[in-house]
Length: 102
DNA sequence: GCTCTGACGAAGT
DNA sequence: AACTTCGCCAGAG
Image 1 (spheres, rainbow, N blue to C red):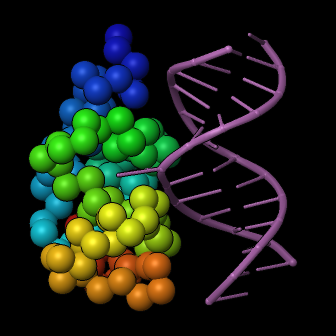
Image 2: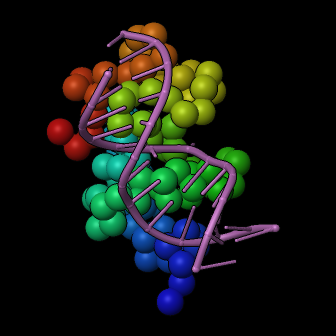
């Protein structure tokens, strides 16, 4: 039984698929991704997996944000989102407008 | 087994 | 709306 935080685990692979399916111009919260993967209350582990992604990964990790709309990573993430026409107001994105899935 | 830590979340003040 | 406190689950030491 592989650990959930292991990139090879079923949880990790489910997370990757979900993140990969977030449409451009939309965002999804860590807890939301975890729940969709079938593991409620595992938001932190989603964060762990994102943090361990190799630089240059094709996964749109920057579309994953905190439940309150804050961006955990900073300017780099903000820039990538803005390039997809996601408005950032005062360090936060509106989940009401850009949250996915509806 | 215990404490600390973390790209988190929710509730209370 | 900003800040604090507490709950959460695994990994590391």
